[in-house]
Amino acid sequence: MGRDLPPRASVVIIGGGAMGVSSAYALAAAGVSDVVLIDKGPLGSGSTSKAAGGVRAQFSDRVNIELAVRSLETFETFAERFGQEIDLHKPGYLFLLDSPGSVAEFEKNVAIQNDLGVPSRMVTVREAKELSPLIGTDGLLAAAYSPTDGHCTPESVVLGYAGAARRLGARLLPNCAATGIEVVDGRIVAVRTEGGRIETDTVICAAGAWSRPVGEWVGIDLPVTPLRRQVLVTEPVADLPPMAFTIDFGTTFYFHREGPGLLLGMSDPDETPGFKLDRSDAWLPRLGEAMARRAPALMETGIATGWAGLYEVTPDHNALIGTARDVDRFIYATGFSGHGFLMSPAVGEVVRDLYLDRTPFVDVTGFDAGRFALSGARPEINIV
Image 1 (cartoon, one colour):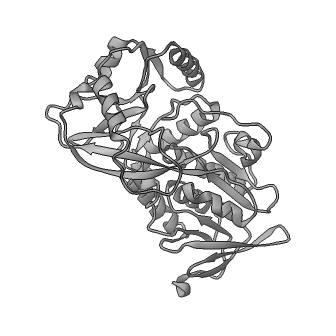
Image 2: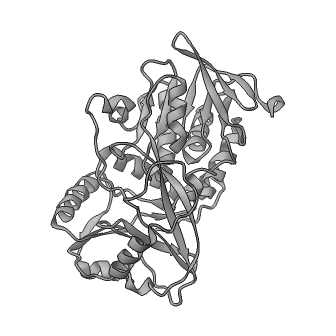
Image 3: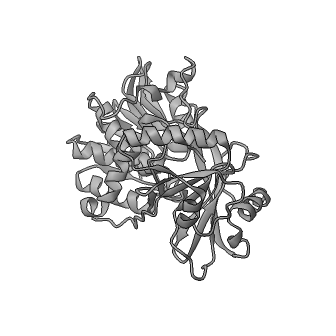
């Protein structure tokens, strides 16, 4: 591996998921030469490949909405721009609401979304049933829906960005783990990898759930905690009707069509932090309870496959995007708490602008990693 490693780079990106390859493409497209990306495994093999693939603009934070809207525009034209089909489906996202507090919160969110051009709206329980025919409506008060949301294939997005970045001269090096960053007098001088050393003055951390140790190499705290999330795919379901990507907000149980069956998942409040990628049955009783109440038609459906992946969770469930204050040229884009894949096109543009010292299209200063020390957390509500 060492002989294939370039001796120097203008920038080294650590992390080859959607965030990393999007950033590599954006930098290369802007004319940055000697862009190098490294990943400890195959490209996209971390959290990106385990994502449910949802893409949406229904968030509560204005910046998250703006990042999502920009990303949705890219997903819409991805096949034409990058020559890579991503299997984009837009049945919309439907959030089912069963408490007055949630209804009030989503009414506020929809107003913000509409102000930013998102065609979301509150819908009645009857409309929700039409949009997602498999749901049980017991206890529901209302729902929120946006027709431009949907889902696509994360691995295909990585392939598209990686191919485009390489065509523009970026060097993408999978199966080459970073092992350290050399800093002299507050300046980065090199990245150490298991294949050798790359001299550089700039590092971009896009390492997802593995970001905290990368920050520690340069003495900054990236408060990212790995948390296992599991996804199941059912066996084929006969006469499966069209349906929105449906989320029962109170329980976080969600499902959407996946080929001839359904992909479904749910958060586990009993899950403990750690790099756990094995599947566990401990969450299944709670999942079964949520399904019995909110999608009873699925109770007799068999499970064909499933997997576990890692959320990269921050204390306020919002991203860490910015440039380190105490170390020159250390840029980070991580901690997206489950919505990194869907924001990766826009965040790649933001990372490019931070590198080039330009003003990004959206103000991300509120996502600085130092906000927690200053009591400046800004919680994102629409997280499942």
